[in-house]
Image 1 (cartoon, rainbow, N blue to C red):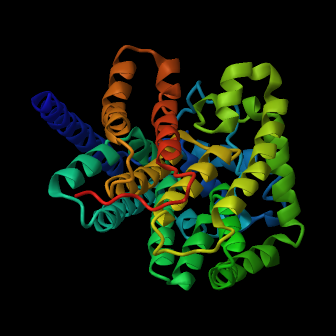
Image 2 (cartoon, rainbow, N blue to C red):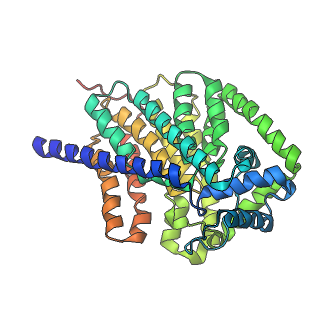
Image 3 (cartoon, rainbow, N blue to C red):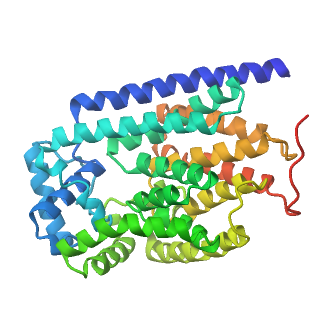
Length: 414
C-alpha cells in the first residue's frame, strides 16, 4: 500500500510539474504576442483611456464605455471573437481605472505586454510567498504542494485574460502573513489594494471589524483615501453611486455582457447550474443575500478577536478565505487562485495532528489539474468549466472535517 501511495504522489509531482511548465511557457509566449482584444485588459485599458481623456463623469455609462472599447479594438485591427457577445463592461471601482492611465499612453499591444510582464513578476512573488509560508514543511511536502499549486489553470487564465487575480492572491497572502506577525498597518494596505476587486475585500474587512483590529482598518482607509478622492475629483462625487447602479444592472442582465455564472465556483454559480438561466435575476438576489448572511459566519469566527498564537487561527483564516470566495457575487475562474492559500492553511493545520486524515483531500487536489487536462482533451467543454467545483468543494469538506466543535487544541504528532 505504501508503494502504491508513493508511486501516486510521484506521478502527481511529474504530471503537475509538466503542467506548471506548460502554463509558464504559455504565459511567457504572451510577452511576444501581447494579449487578445477579448481579454479583461481591454476593459482596463479602455477604463484608463476614459479616465485620461474623458468624459470621466460618464465612466459607468455603458454607451460611452462601448464607444471607447470599440475604438480600442479598431486600433488593434484584431477581429473580436464570436464567442464574446457584445461589449465587455468596465465594472471595476473608479480608482482601478486610475492605475491604467499611464498604460493608456502606449498602444494596446505594448501596454498589454507590460501587463503580462507584471503578472509574471507577481507569479514569481507568489511563489516566494508560498515558499516562505510552507517553511517548516518537509522538502517532499513543499515540492508536492508547489507543483500542484502552480499547475492550476487559473495561472494561465490570469495572464491570458490580463486579470487582477494574481494581485488579489498576493494581497491575500500578504494580509495573512502581516496579521499573523502583528503588523496591522501592512495588512491594511494589502486589504486596500484588494479593493481593485471589492468583492474580495468585503469579507476580510468585516473580519477585521468583528475582530476589533481598528489599526488595520484605519491603515486600509488611509491607503484608499488618496486614490478614491482623486477619482471623485476627476469623475464627480456621484461616481460611486453610478458604480453601484451599474453593478446592479449587470447582475440582472448578465447574459448580455459576457458574464458567465456557470463558470463561477461560488453560491451564484452553483444556483445557476441548478436552476438554469431563466432565473438569473432571482439567483443574483439570492447571491447578494448569501453575501450578507456570510457576515454572520464571520462574526462567529472572529468575535473573540484576533489571536494569531491560538491553535485554530490558521483554520479560521482558511474559513474566512473560503467564505469570502463562496459568498462573492462574482468569481471568475482565474480567481480560483485564492484556493491555494486556503489549501496551504488547511494542510498546515492538519499536519500538526488534529486527528483529521488529510490524505483523501490531498489526493483529490493532487489529481485536480490532471483531471482538468483530461476533460479538456476529451472536448467536454461544459465539464471543463464546472471542473472548478471539484477543488472548491474538496476544500470546504476538508474545512468541515478539520473544525473542532469542542474548541480543544489538536493533538501533536509524535
